[in-house]
Image (cartoon, rainbow, N blue to C red; front, side):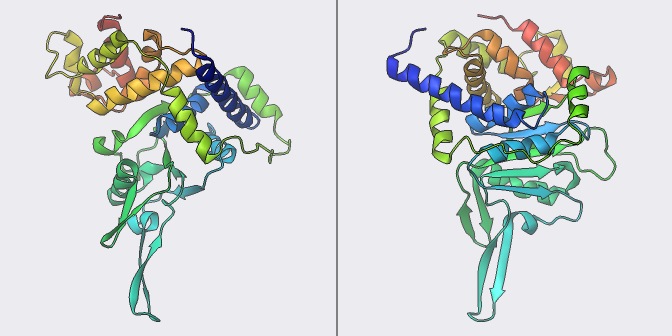
Length: 327
């Protein structure tokens, strides 16, 4: 699709800025291209990202590197069982000089928030993130305070250790745009990591994206063209995950609850961004298929029958993609 000259220049500028950002992160992080693209996808789509992977896969380091490339505020919270909601959002502090209670804002008042090991904090602390993530505001006392824009939550969790953890409820999981699975590195990547031991750890990544540029990038990537047939395909895909609507598919016995309409909106946004990453100004069905696992895997609640047959959400999503007709 041929673009007008002005739009083509904006598209090329956006590719250049994102390329510089990925290059900066790549100075420190070996491999993990899917993880880096997923984080940038969350930033460009205006959503939050949940990272899941075993310890030692550089989840926290990758988020820190991303924050270093952005001219935005960044704060990290280590979630622990003794954390209180006020430690996250802030509280009212009494001032004897004036006899008044004044708000003391917590670390959530930043642009990029890293919630490290989010499943180690109790439900009250996890729930304190709900208003912030969805409404972009925090209530302290009887006053609501807006959060800085853009506001971007990146949370990590360990999938193999369940003792002393608090699994995130489905209501909070649905607040995340993407749930990214962080894989092990390949043999070649791990060898390169090994050879980097002893090198200077502190590398100058450099700031590549200013606050105003992020808003401009969001407008550009959402201007990527999507045909009406692909929009209908996205709706059909999400509808097919709901057992109460689609009763003819045999594999739906593996699903207790399907994806919400929020999944439809996020598939729409993310498919456009994936097309942008592939240097295209239009969306094809393969773009939707590429982002579907990351958008849907935490929104589909499996039935007991699926768990008894050791089926994962990714396997069910794979069957969905095979079943729904492609335009």
